[in-house]
Length: 71
Length: 167
Image 1 (cartoon, each protein chain N blue to C red):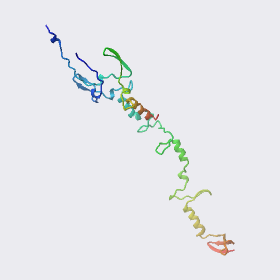
Image 2: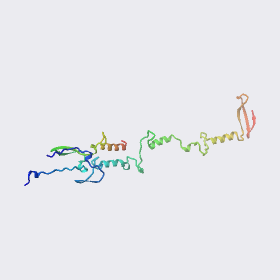
Image 3: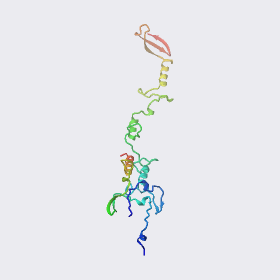
């Protein structure tokens, strides 16, 4: 019969750095359950990643188009 | 008891690469790069940037490197020396200049014979006329003034270059 000690097991966590599959890309937000609670998570896209201190990557690409059109 | 602490992800937690895949202990995955970051719902950042760079070849709003035979490239009215100018502005400026065929060019080896009283003459043509009048064997009379007082008119008659009378 197994003893209490026999039921223990060692948990091994191996760190794997994130790839594209580990990131929730998209626009808007989704709901996830974290710590048992339903939370709203913002999807990752160019508008939420900074290019500089005041502009996102999307802002800069938008500016490139506007500048090229002479608008 | 096992306690897991959530840490926000930073650059060191991501595989950043342009390689098509990356192999980790858990298996084969995809590195993160601009091709996976959405710019719009239909374009990635990589595609959007590439479109911006190549738009000059595909969008009619941009000048084509090799030109487009079926569509003129338009420019606004030029205001500084380095601006391109539209045809109308160039035509207006050129209208203020004389046509080369309508003027006597400085230094030109081509002679011009005036056809009417108001036509211009060049130096060679004028020199030729002066030579005929004063160095050639002319015949005629003209009014001169007396050497004695400089005011009394006299008529000098010339025949074949020879003064024949002073009255």
